Length: 253
Image (tube, rainbow, N blue to C red):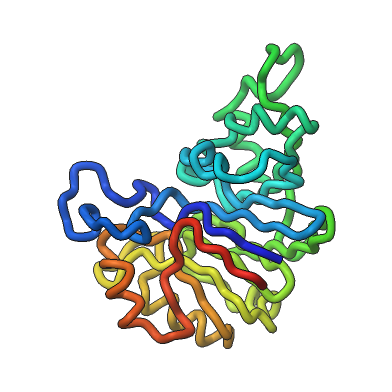
């Protein structure tokens, strides 16, 4: 199974508009961060995690072929704003979207033209599937276990696929979720920056503690803002088994 990081940035992306810090003016492509998304591929199956406003740009370098399923972590703009760009993929049939009930309900409000009767020609064909934490989803040859994490006071989803766990926008996680993450060896998890507490996102020390708690062999940090620092310098500071991910990076799990 291959996972490609399509985007590893926070809601505003990096560079941040109007900012002239060292990260935002860096010429290292690893310091350019589109909004968070990932593409998971096997020989038979292709699954997208989140679909933010940069989706069209992110997917262009890839072969045009079906997306078998889309996993949404939550309804925030930086995770769903690219859904209208599924239009071209609808030549293969409706795009199946899996999300918790709150996200499913909110999509019907934010994109009302995609649902209901008498849809106009060209509207993306979306098949919404409400899923629950701990209830397995099967998409092609992938078995996926949703887990629940807290984005501040908001209940959102992370996803476990085999020995891989993908969690973004987490502030806390209930101890009752941890058994569903036992045996995870590859962890992808968010860390906004190193300092200055945030009400709904964890910081780097939180992410490191969480990785150690799970016993992950390799951890990739996502959903970082420009305040995290330069990619190369940060990775020299971090343990070898905990590293910043970067846009375009592919890993084999």
